[in-house]
Length: 204
Image (tube, rainbow, N blue to C red):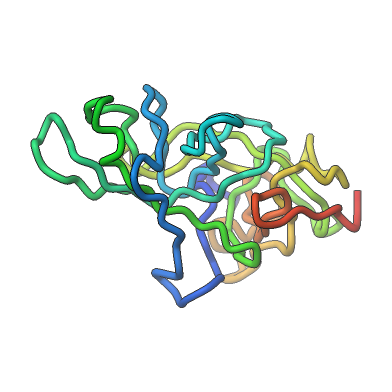
């Protein structure tokens, strides 16, 4: 049975703390940039600019160091007149004058491992150890879960500015979703170019 094209972003598989919560880094007091771009759970995020320490959804195919992987946020909603805890940042719903009411949680543990879907080309065992880029894709899960996926067919390389390094294929359970070879198979990856770590891959 072929894998289904159903990306879910970068889902943490290991790291500090323990599953399913692990240990996330909090960006309080205006941690998210106030703009119209939403951020979804498991999205890669970067800093808004060199002069702004807030985070934004990372650009597809980016080579800027990641700030981490977005896990959720809380903010003072102007529409609901209360504090909202959410898996995703809607891109608005706070007063720009009260941007300091936004907090975010990200994974930036340099040793964290993530499970992610590959693109329509798929990843191969020979590519393990290579660095790789990603596409953002379309949010799923009712608009709250990232649609990001890696692009090994076109970007697997030794370039040290690529954001992730592929570690191993997802193979268990055999025949399960993501475990079939070829298109849309799943891969375990680690950070390669993140604010807390940068590496050069061992294979092209």
